[in-house]
View 1: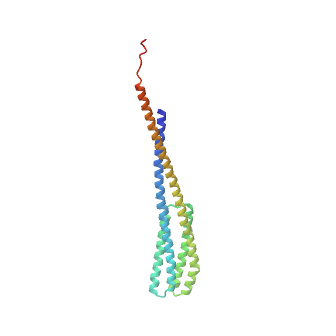
View 2 (view 1 turned 90 degrees about the vertical axis):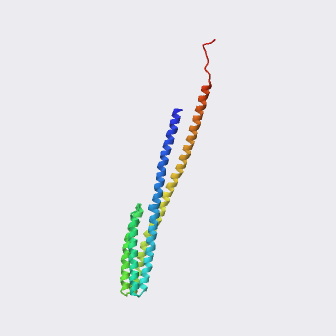
View 3 (view 1 turned 135 degrees about the vertical axis):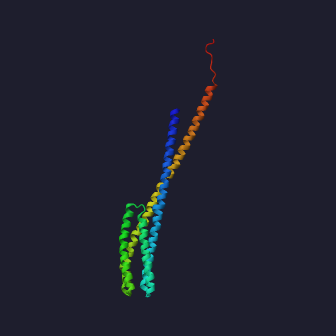
Length: 216
């Protein structure tokens, strides 16, 4: 009985320890989903939005003939480009798997090419070479923009895949915790029944009256 009780208590202690450990892991996984998956996805979405905005602003610059409007559009492209660089640096500081690091390096290379083409388009447009600027916009500019979008789409896809893996891992941990809780409840019931049985047996032993075998 003592060995059985000791074994049950040992199992309960181990189950509680593992439950605490699993709860900590689940908490960390949800934190990773937020900080390393959700926030970076929003950052990438913001980068894409500003990249499209720059594309449209370049077109407006080419179509415009007013010098004052040229300045404001140029400033908008410059501000967006600086903000994109800041966002990408923010993304680089998050936890990245190997494929994400490769995708980020590819994006940074294509981004540098796009910025160089943007500067050429803006200079030609500001100098009045509208036809040449438009031709560059529709050829090299268009190709550079498409090449830029490819790694961004890949990074967004990876965010979803890794987030799904973290969710599945957390779900498995939660299911394990449920099993452990049922195990602890079962052990508790077993201990209660065992104690009740011992108490009942003790009462029966106490009710037995000793006999005097010295009498004939």
